Length: 631
Image (cartoon, rainbow, N blue to C red; front, side, top):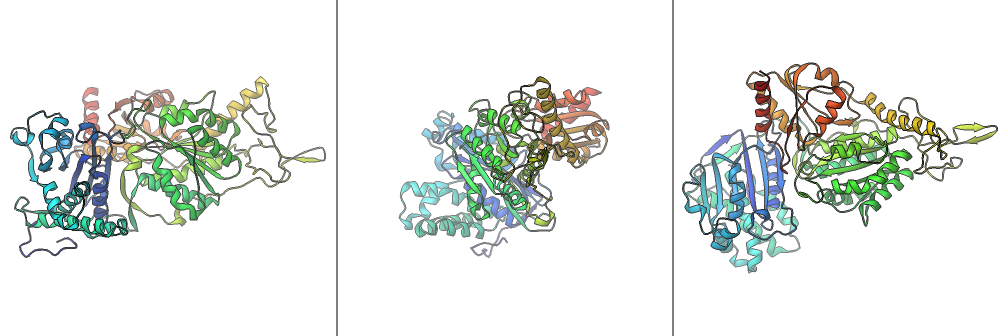
């Protein structure tokens, strides 16, 4: 039996082993589904399962209760083996109201289970959800393919909380704890992590604390005693690489990666941003690290935020800002200024569905071409993309290293799926992080007659980086700004040949980054029929699909292009080893355009712009279809 705050009854139910399971909690945005999912995730991480999550928020701040567009969901897949995706199909849907059932029933596998809060299936809620006067619970044909558990969550929560004297609103908000307790019991998850969290969260409100703990245990007890559930399920611990782990979201990992870059480089981190979904969480995370010398600044708009980043980079600090697609548009002029000035800074784009306001709480990969070309003039810069929530740590660290080593702004691409999703993350040993040396100009680097002087655009030959001089350093006075520079001196120059020379020089400097990139790893077959080429958050889904294709006897490999500009130098050789090349993207084919332009090969796009990540089955089918069409 699982560890819990309640004892196991004498007639404990049988426990059935599972290799993996996928759960989806869904309800109104005020039903606490994100909290319920995050607490189930915490219990699952402590049970030592591998896992992947997909929070799904409504776009409106507070959509009308009971409507389909107000449904909030949290999907989680966990298992005893390697888990790379939040799951293609759901094994258990916990539906808190009719709208949650209507929106998500199609995601449940045939034969899967649906736990329904029957107390909410009343005429008003049915109408809001688009069911009209017909109650889907009375339609045996519509639900015949699923195992249905009808639970009076609202009523039993109200009964359990009568002794606490809470008002009706507070009681209704607590029904998610009953659902959580029941689900923890069903999958043999420990109760104690949630009990401990509630005790900390509501330490100053003992009545609320005790009420939530009480109803959590009531839900757990209900699973033990009801005849509706005849068995529990148990997922054995995963065999993870030895180490110390924590469950981490992408936003948390990225914040830690920036702090690690600051600590290892001994540069003060200054982070500036303007609130924008889904990037705002990064500011919230970084405010927790003031004891590491992190400075945070919430600007009055996007332009002010990146202006502060340019200023702090000029001042000799580690300048970082973050935004999403619309904000990156507003930052374009200042990013061009940083390219011209050749200042080291990192611009993070947590991508979302666009254009304009678009789908602000949904995920997409549609800003790649914006990152590549969204500035005036010839203004290339390096682009790095994170691949998993935990990888956001390493991607942030790498982006900072490239910026400082090559004296250039760098764009770091994440997305809503990565930022909000979570996975077990092995905490790295600081000694294993890549070295992060920083060298500031300390003295003049040229002479004119007997006069010593500082030339700000004399290049380091290996990287073509210019020197980084902190303002106020004696003897290093120089001119800098947005006008074109004269080579070496940095003086303003309108000479046509100099402008072309400097434009090409800045481009070569960015291309020189490729000389410092590690070999591109190929997952799966090293040569064969199909190479699946991905970038960003598609990595886990692609690898799962590749495993399925290889299990059917196909020779399939995959690469995840982490460095999108400049592209790694070894890609051409890898492409030559495969007959066909499939490129899945959550856009209309942006990396495909870049690859076709560079390598002149018939890359096949697989596109999706639905605000949701790919399913492994979608990529697996595309691999099969590609080979069938080729035959």
